[in-house]
Length: 320
Image (spheres, rainbow, N blue to C red):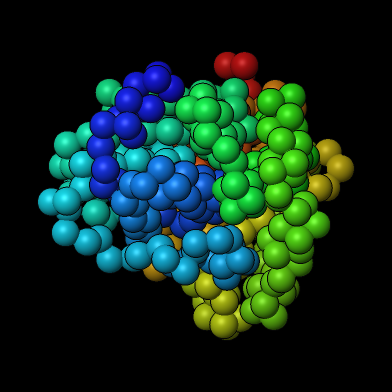
């Protein structure tokens, strides 16, 4: 499949690159690295994202050139859809993007059923960034310092700072190559993890009192409401990482963040330890992801959603 992607790159000149809503480090790092690669080959590449770039990723080289209004599609010959298990994950413009003649999907989510004929999907990869690195190397191209910074960020963030179960040999070897290629681990980590605005701390202060432990302390959760966001003067991106906090409690195997959306639905982020499969739980509600990290969106009252989620967790545990 790498060869088919390389052939698409060699045959065409004008590319659109996009990723999922509610951007994270893997989506952005992968997009930007691919864009740098294509431009270094003399191609034209445009990154379109529905959502704005979170502040802690604005240090990534090229982030200031990302557009948030989809340009006219006629010139585009190929669209790369990155870090998405389904086309509609790119947001409101997914149907229009789907009309571009050649679609290429690069992703590492186990829930990806394959919505493109040309695709590179590997659930064993730590991140989409790791797969972009494979593509670059397979094409025999040099990894520039800009690309190394973007791809290291992708791997760093999707492995939770090299703490999650997806921190396998391939991730570490790739990270080492990226450091050799110019990525600065300390500088990148400071930008990602140590550049929070005061609003994020105010939001965290509002979220911590919502901590709930269930199922004998095996399941921990936090809630972020629209009111909490408004009171803290915070953005949804400022809740990134909150889902990991309950998981840090001894005995907690599954951690959940219930984040209220503007339309009243709740976005659920789920994390787990060991072999506990939260992807199966997310799939119950139409979501997906990985065994230890998944998500979904659910309608209803929070108390009812909680009940349904705990029920799904019990069912998943019984089927394991």
